[in-house]
Length: 163
Length: 137
Image (cartoon, rainbow over all chains, first blue to last red; front, side, top):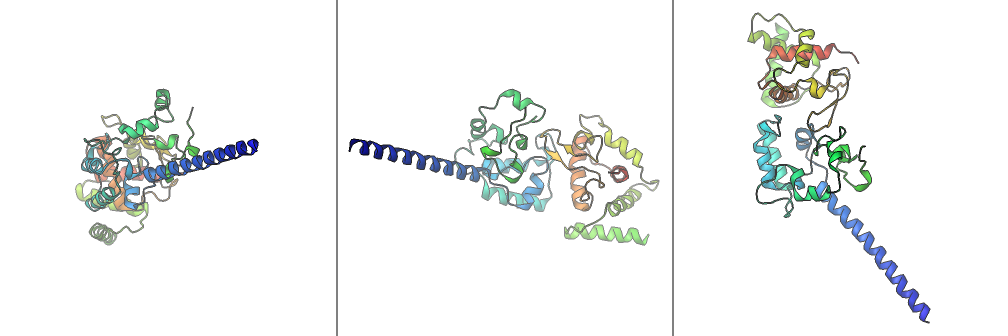
């Protein structure tokens, strides 16, 4: 009788843990999907996905994106200017898809995704030598480690850190 | 002359409507030829060799065209800052290259500013395109 009770408690614990683990996994994936969802706008993909991966719009706040768009002729040392029609479209797209939570906006506009608290936290275990390696070179080079970056897949499974 | 007029009309139409029509690199080269002739009556034709020198030169700055597109533009390049892969620039290796004049102009506008800190002339663009078209896969 006592053994039955013990077994029941054990079963319940194992089940709860299992359900909890599955829930965490789903929640994490859903969160990651939202934050890193592939850019869907064709103009955004074409204009902002040639020199670097078309970053998920949710990674910066609306204010940050507008600041980025206002300085495209001097975009981190490169000229990335677009024609007036594309600019209008990009403004609308980024405005409605920008990050809305506190992580995306820190008062002053963050122009570099790699300087947001979220990015730093997610990459805190990456050693400096990896960042400097010839295969990575820059935190902008998502695809160096995230093999599915091109299609918006940043899941843990797709990570291959080069030597 | 009639051909030039047609190219000019096509070019103007493209700019006016903003519609991308599939073109060939040779057609785009002809567009630069009439523009170069208009800019300088002494224009004596494009030179692939001059284009190659231009492509490999740093023009007083840190970067050349080759910094991202490599010394051999039939090979895939890599962005000098972000490291992102860039498809080969030569049409022989990437058939989609130089088939949309608006797109070609956009990239000359961006990249000439990065490399030369000024816009490229039609003669310079034509030389570079002539060089790229001369490359075999």
